[in-house]
Picture (cartoon, rainbow, N blue to C red):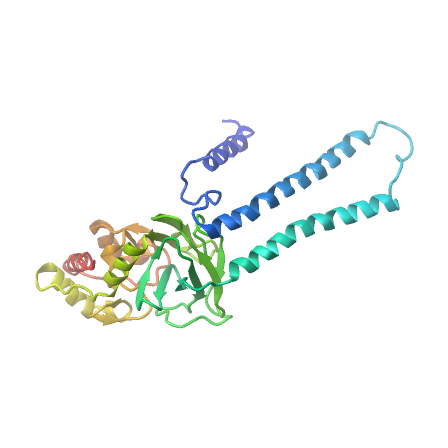
Length: 343
């Protein structure tokens, strides 16, 4: 393949990916009133930008062709100092900016208001996974954010200090910036050390909405995914009640040996499991088996993936804060069996 054709082929492939239907990260297919409001602002601003681009680039091309060097003597007629032209190209951009600024500011203030009847969730950005705390429900979970449909969900987002055990809000000069981005439900919101940012999401109908950390935050930034799972109010209440239950206690067999390994190998110091441990720093595992993925949404929760993860976490996810505990095969088998009972 000739070098000259490669950029064109790459451009066609990129264009083709933009035409995919039902793409999980499609920002142009809003699935809730917040995302639709933002989309309604984006579209007219986009088309205004297109018109400005065409006019400016068209004028540039016209000037290049019309006044190109034909061997003529002297300079063409100059427009510098023309009051009419200078007034025109000063007022026109000001009017365009005003036309964009007014609806933008109004939309920002509208979206920042919190009405009674919404649900609050505290979102904690760690390296590299998301933690969700439901202050009204007394539930802490990770990776999957569960919400009811038809109801605004108010998110308070903050970043936590990172290290072997990440337990406290990061100061301004510590930690890293993340960005919470569920594209079908809302735009991006930075998660900044030392402050609490706010955003609102809302889903029209039950479903699974994919998302991603949108701010480069370190070695496994690409592995910091998120999933918003929207339920009907009845199903959400049922999920919340299930999450409040303590973890199942195995009475024997391989799962029981896994629970013993969990306690003896130091897992309990970082991971909380209801009725078993109150560890801090790692994801809450009380109902791990109710999630489809683990390790920041990176891997499917299969026996094989859990086994590989327990054998060498940093080997599967570069930069993982979970160390290699040099577990024996029997300990890994027991832990996999135990973790899969946590429904």
